[in-house]
Image (cartoon, rainbow, N blue to C red; front, side, top):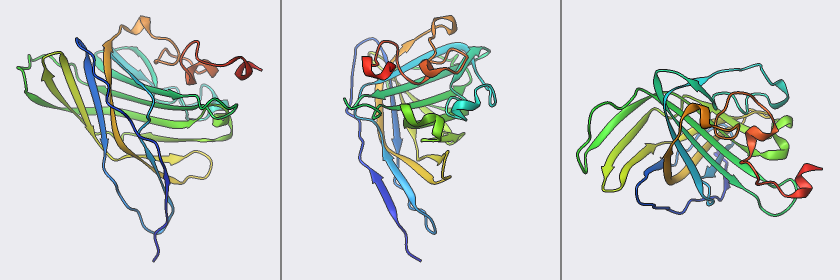
Length: 224
């Protein structure tokens, strides 16, 4: 039996900022036989990570059939847990080439103090992942995964916390049902945010075109 592997070369560069939390998403290579497997690397562009306490993931599976499942699991409301909203966006400068990455994780609140250098393993209770092209979402041009991120390792540093997520992040193509694996390492600053401060891109409930790109990022041609 022959294995075929398709690789989309994207990677991430580290970003460090004082007084913030950091997120690392590490995905290990996995080979799957009997079908094509699309391997996607973590994004090269800056990644935004928001930690929202007293929150929960809101599931609206059939609210916006125009976009299918692309925004399912990425909406955040008030709750009793903590939610990590991870977002990345890339505009390649040519119409119809904008790409987006969304990962949303829910876990129990962190109540115990963590000494410097301490590693705490936090089980992820629910997780969702989407990667796709902005202008191809309503045609199924995205991949989506549910509960494929199982654990977050938190490390106390001098400037805050680091979080490490070990993959792979598995997802399925919305149009052709192809298997996809998100490879590489994600790393970014994490900012604390309240539920009522979120916009649609960050996790405010509701699914619109604005749910799939950061505010004030589109070029004039994208609005035509």
